[in-house]
Length: 257
Image (cartoon, rainbow, N blue to C red; front, side, top):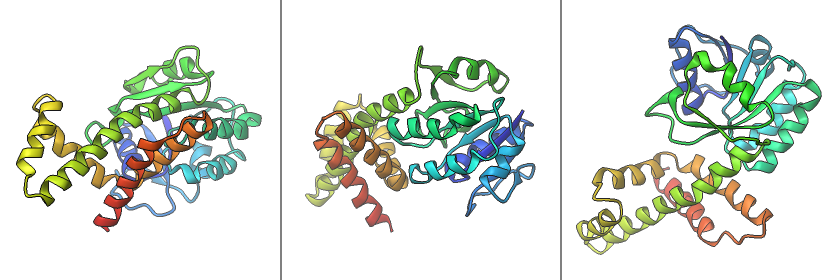
């Protein structure tokens, strides 16, 4: 299969490497590639160039760049291609991207990444939505991906579900991070760890994963929670706790820099 990966950060590079390892033709673009790439991956000079070679396009960029990328590839997109918008943005931005690409008749898929990428790479759970989502699942069967379908869906439905889920998971992580910091400050780290453990089924390793994951991915998760805030405000829901989660991630980011 001919695949373009737009954005070769931690997630995009891992997807590209896994697909190349499986023997698929992979073209990639990133303005500042930092991660080691499989020798068979062909780096090109623009998003549009990568798209021009591919049948399947995975866009794995920051939400802030997603509109500009859609405008760029609209010059080369074709009706037979599948474009998977995988950036962590709210449903309204995903809809806006689909509208930009609509004149090209490319098949746009709202494809949400539903778990951290490093453990499983291209086999990370995904959630697909949009008019062409069922057709897309048939198309990518040879890749044996872990994709669930939002039935009878439109663009933005996968993004909405991902962000609603993030309120819970990232919120829990923020509470655990703050509690552990407080326990350390009071010299009672073992005590607070025990309290948290009683709520997460005695899984001590899970506590560490919540803390380390929040620190390692603070920037991306901060942007993710900003997308949640925007989505909730659009619906008239005041995101009091979600703002706190976002602010906690900003604090973690500053402490790690």
